[in-house]
Length: 305
Ligand code: PSU
Ligand code: MN
Image 1 (cartoon, rainbow, N blue to C red):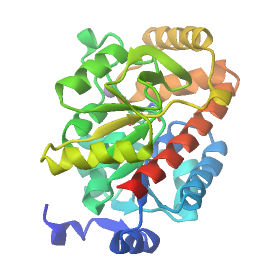
Image 2: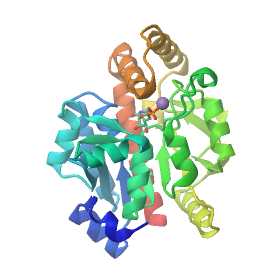
Image 3: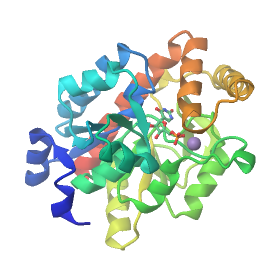
Image 4: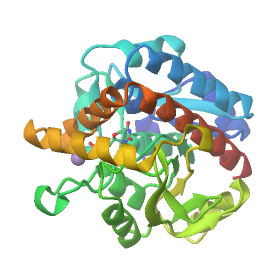
């Protein structure tokens, strides 16, 4: 990577710059979860609260977004407000990134793009809610999130609560195996399904403590094995939702998306909004809490690294 050239594109917030220079733990956060994953104004409160939780753990948060073509690493409260309430904020995955930057546009970064920009800035740990993956019916549609290829190649550890059953979770785990991405589950071997503690699938290994996860991450890169590590952190008991209820809601949302011929980058935001409407906001409260839980875990892993 040409670091001189990169400087023309990257804009790192002083708080984050200082932390990176002095070796303080830093946790990257994505902005698609703000702009396309939650409604306003809950999303703006969430964006500020999750940053403060990371600070309370002794780490520095770096929410990532594209603003007027700049790759922003660390956002001001005004930037967070823009990502939460701005109209027509693009959803930016790897393929969209050069266009948005060249045309000086504003967009929210997915897991894939957040990983790319975190790596450019030298940030090793990233907390989110759920990753994208292999969609149900991908055998026909070819719809596999670019998040999985990014996990295959980019050296950032991603802490998530598993993935939603809007995806084919079994195929998502197969894909990660093919591309050599270790899936570590915190405190259990069971792979969680976002709102629910269990998906019916297992991850590769259980990790008892953040230090163990950090040791695996460090060792992967010490051995010259490029790519990410996926850390699956189950939603806390008090916020976990009933799997039967959620699977029914999700099945109906997927059927509705098919009826409306929604596909491509619009499908994930469509399903998320639909699930939130049908559960009357219960899912939003769980979504916020699982993301908080991941942010705290990511701060501990970043400190141990
Ligand atoms: N899954 C969720 N919540 C989200 C997303 C996925 O439960 O907010 C977002 C993330 O930003 C993820 C992106 O990277 O959707 C995946 O989109 P796609 O499937 O179009 O790659
Ligand atoms: Mn897709």
